[in-house]
Length: 352
Image 1: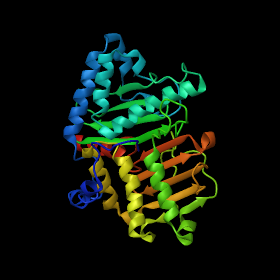
Image 2: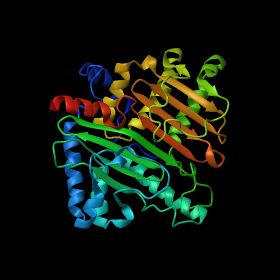
Image 3: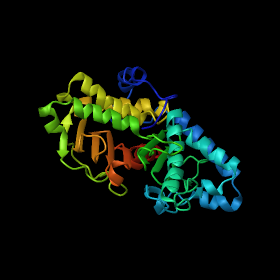
Image 4: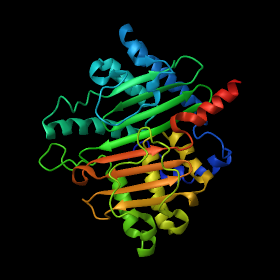
């Protein structure tokens, strides 16, 4: 997920070569993120620093109750959101907010998040509606107390960007759902940032993969002649894809399997290596042969298309249908840990 260089993201040799050893330390039921309690602690400290930078009247908006109904109410449409928006923050407060975000994202992931804000500004210019397409309308909100011993959650969200992280002190953290979009998917000519593609690497990799399949394999991979029009496992539908579709990795060549894994590396690589490594280790634990790659729509560039990588511990969806196939919605979910449910189960079992 991203554009440009991949500073800070783990390489295939780092991740896929090391996952067997990492997975050997983790039983199949283990948490994907149990290996990073130190990062969870750093996250709590960064959240407290951000809260400490706010005026007292803003803290009440910034930190809501753990039981607040909005904790799992993520979305990627432009709208008002709970918390404090970037446009409401001073430069010091915004820097503290980005410090918290940097405890989650790799350097490449941070580049992508900032690229999303650039795209929002660009969209405002292209539509001549800068007030509505506001790069300052991205809000940070906490649920629960990052200074305590109970679970807490934070979300950074705006149009086409949603990062949800659940933290269980002493256990670790869980990241899911993770949403990035892009409108336009490619900034048009005669614009300051012409040619910029926020999610271009993901799309290029998927096109290379679908075109590498022979007729028999492609027939298995293609689940619909037309793109699906949007991601399926959107807000409130996170677990709606119960069965795997498309072609299993066990039916692909080694090079094609590597192509699927490269897509997953791109998504995981937006996260810090301490998170990406165990997440990819879980893929191996669950069995790479159980991963499926599915495609819908045209295999030709510039036409609506959709792809999916789906396995027991991962669901990646990518749809480019709207605006003449120049508008992307992209999602990564861990079906076993949506909103950190596995992490929370372990926390509460340990507490009792």
